[in-house]
Image (cartoon, rainbow, N blue to C red; front, side):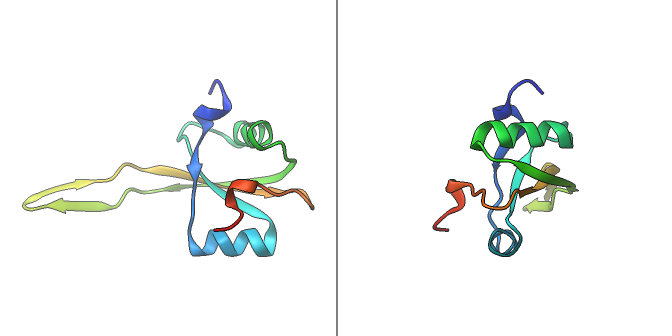
Length: 96
């Protein structure tokens, strides 16, 4: 991975992700499949100017989809939960 924009694809917004922000100061992102934990940590610190304590990742399988008689799949994706240091916040998640 070259730069931070290639590693972090987009924030992942769900009910559980919002609870984790309030309770544990953990933020959830969709990341590139090839990204590893040190690359994710570096990218979040670079993009949002925060201190990352811990990164956990999980590969999510794509769901099956049908269009009439044709059957296909959505692509697999990778989810990363990033725990920030006490007092750090990411502003893009505020107000959701």
